[in-house]
Length: 315
Image (cartoon, rainbow, N blue to C red; front, side, top):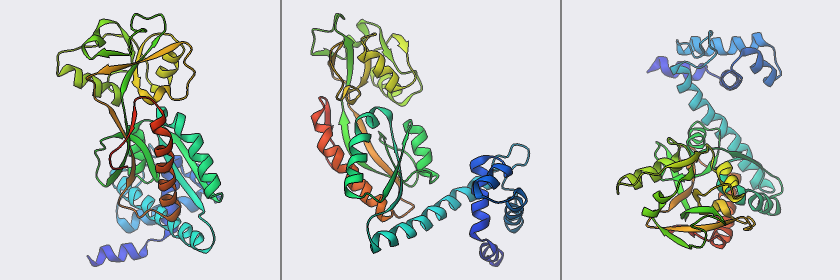
């Protein structure tokens, strides 16, 4: 125990900062440029940290973190985030809410949420600096866990140690079909009718597709895709342009001109749940808490305006 305490005391923030930069840029030279220093300085700080911990943190052949390196980097990122939160909290207490807030969002939700969210944040907290990241649920959850993001709007339920979720809304899974399709004069089809015609789907292995396949398999239904499109936003774009019918979340059609397509509800198919996830291992800064409040308000105002979207019970 005494050795562990001594090693911890010997560490300094510069060593952790240099290690994080190497991990981010996957080279000592790239890390040096980002830190505005020389490569030998970066190498020295990382080597000293490795000597104190008595283990290699960076594999010099691949420039990737070792298993021990990943463990140190995960905690170092939390330390960096907490230090930034201290600065942001004090600045917010002295004057106005200010600082960087990193927000992730799945694409179909970002399409209608991003603009009003940014506008409202700018109106309420002009000194706040939001950074938006558009990615899949899997990618966003990983970046929440390792400290790269402060929060993310993702598909739920979320499974992951140290992650908390605020339920935002549920949305129907719907068919968006061209106006000349046989389903076009229908407002609703049954879950079994889904197999009557080929439809565009996301590929197997994606969160949206796997949830649908699992539910349909339980009642003996298998869907035959006319095309598989990796990316809900691209899939929605093709469907909304009248290319072919596609299975999509209802909010994919939010605020889109309805000249070439129709929205058809599916009787019996469960809704998709969407929530706001954040890392409960860190204490949110004042800017992060303010952003969570604003984002929740934007969703409350806008989501009910879209057919097939319903606010979550606890929101």
